[in-house]
Length: 116
Length: 114
View 1 (cartoon, rainbow over the protein chains, first blue to last red):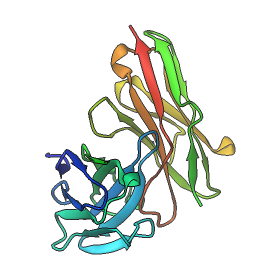
View 2: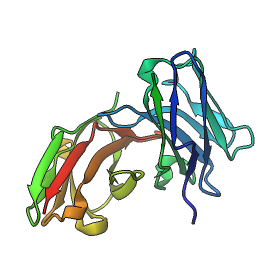
View 3: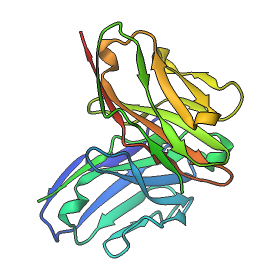
View 4: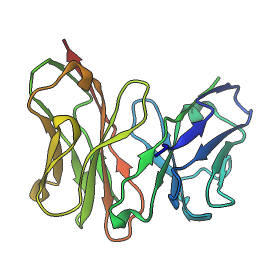
């Protein structure tokens, strides 16, 4: 079974520029998550999709971050304009159904963003 | 609100030493508990999880964890570490019913010296 795919793996941009990250979850996984992991901290949820609908985006800084999962499979996370404090690893994860069913969340390798 | 505390930020052990990493959570209801590991340059991988039943759960690579409800703890243990266990370890929790995502601790970096 292929894992969660993310690209690009690394990105360096200047502040106020924009960046987009792409994620392809494990086939058949209806739930998709984007987490932000700042150096020295644990991952923090940004947004959760169930198929193509948003379940939870309460922690997403909506003035600069946006995410979509139009066809319920791939997802894109965009930051515009970027700030220095957005430097982090952006993790995509997927799961077969809702967490309460007991299924495991699988993580991608992450997209490392450095804002200079 | 849920929160997870990992008090050990960096642990250094020699090979064959025993390991215990602390994890405490704050939530009064039913929880699912997880330990994830992140080897250098790799993605987060599930070590073990507790949903219900026997509070002592065994995971991959000889790791185990014990859920102590009265202490709100889910400590990770391994009787004899190897150099290859060098990694970052994250405890995570989700609260039931209906919670859909994981709350992570800040992680514990383990360095095993050959």
